[in-house]
Image 1 (cartoon, rainbow, N blue to C red):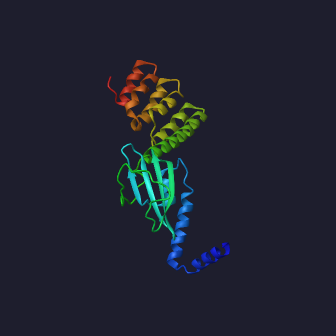
Image 2 (spheres, helix red, strand yellow):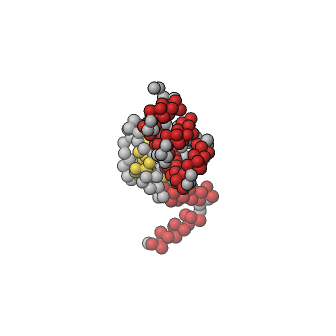
Image 3 (cartoon, rainbow, N blue to C red):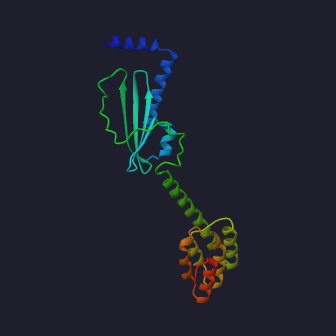
Length: 234
């Protein structure tokens, strides 16, 4: 019996035409790529592996589903990937045999919202979670950059060299209020601090917090000058 089944399988493979072989190959490749999906992956990573989904759905609570249909030779394989805050939280893969009318081998979850199709070309910057991911990545890069700048200032022995370095960096980059406070605290005298403030104030990244810089100055006349540099009311 086993030999008979093997012979039948071999004969079926020999009768496949090129289109059948392509379908079989695509089904296997799609299945292999789907197996590489892991919890916590971003939408961009999933898109790079599986491409554009067949359907895309978004719920009112922000949960998003991507549904992929892959057609093999004997069955259609469906993969549903669920995202929360732009990252994978669940994946379900199952097959639908051709000609089967009794439904899938595995029951599907009832849909809470309609499916959307052809809502592409896909722009990964527009969809939930990716903007937050990008903001977090840029923030970490900025922190690493500032830590390097801060160490360079510390390593310079003379205040004039420190001021010149800060001036050169500030002419091409911007600082947050907290980063500016850290730079000001490297200097003891208000006169030096005012020079640093004159370099960073024009391109402060969060001017709404600029008032915090005033407390870094000892004397009232220096505080007044700092307010003018920051264009704060008296």
